[in-house]
Amino acid sequence: MNASSSATGRYTTTAIALHWLLALALVGIFVVGVVMSGMPFSPQRLKLYNWHKWAGITVLALSALRLVWRLTHRPPELPAQVLAVMPPWQRLAHHGTHGLLYVLFFAVPLIGWAYSSAAGFPVVLFGVWPLPDWVPKDKALADAIKPWHAVAAFTLAALVVLHVLAAIKHQLIDRDGLLARMMPVR
Image (cartoon, rainbow, N blue to C red):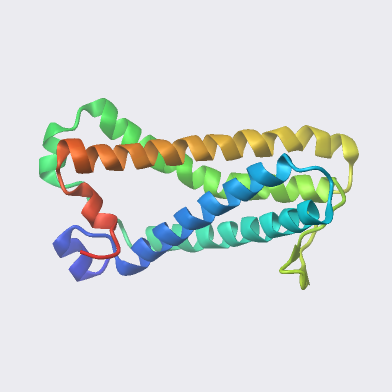
């Protein structure tokens, strides 16, 4: 962590940028996923599937960048005044939620990629770069993988909602300024 970040208790500018970029990407990809899965077979649905896969690979890359950044730039500790009033179960929920978010940042796109490979629909990033298939083409395997992508995606969405609700609680109820550490502007 750089000196200015540790002195202010704020996340680094890079960590903040990656957080909000990934947040926007996750909301967008989730909405596209829900919309496309409810559409009848059409050219528009195929286009949305391709966009969804491209966004998934982008989320995977952003997640890798974010993880590398976090491992090389320790995030600021929770402020002492927050820790003093935070019950142990909330500390556990704080760390558990962040850990599960990171796991699902990787699991959801990797499961989706595996499903796409098994279903015989390769990922061609931005319609230009074919990515290797993760698993062999196998309809039974695709049928087995598909529900796991949905379960993982909805679990990720639920954790994102929980994360947002916790941030709102800290801002509006606790009024402890915790949210300001991740806001792009002071």
